[in-house]
Image (cartoon, rainbow, N blue to C red; front, side, top):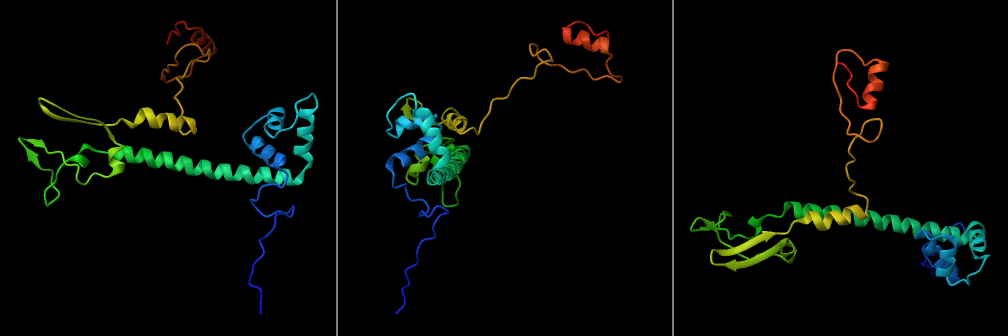
Length: 207
């Protein structure tokens, strides 16, 4: 009879990959380190007593404990993987909002054409999915009939994208002084040093 139980492959430090450290304080310290906390902050988060030597003790522990270093690396990699998943979710959600259309809420005939009544589309929510309902910002009725408005994804998704660094503001170009808007003059000949100095000072170049 053979034993088919396969033993897990161990890390260089002899640990089971991904398993929390046996020392709970060390495990908490590893998480605090990945979160970017300073030595003192990480030590306090891990439950160590505050004092003048805390910062140095945490620094030595981070530097000399191989298992702690290994665990920090594992947590950091997992965090990076989760960040990539989150980035992908934001982009995928943005694409959904970008494809959203009022036509998704209109009634269609057997040939897929939008049905009209008095020249206007007829609302039909019988086939609307929960996902599509997220696109609605307003649905109301007045004397002129129903009013429907698609939610603008820019305000909400822009915040998410900025949070993940997926969106950056455009920086206005300035002149060499860093104060005035940059402007460029196309000429058949290059500027002389004197003209360039006048340009930097904001005076006429004579060109």
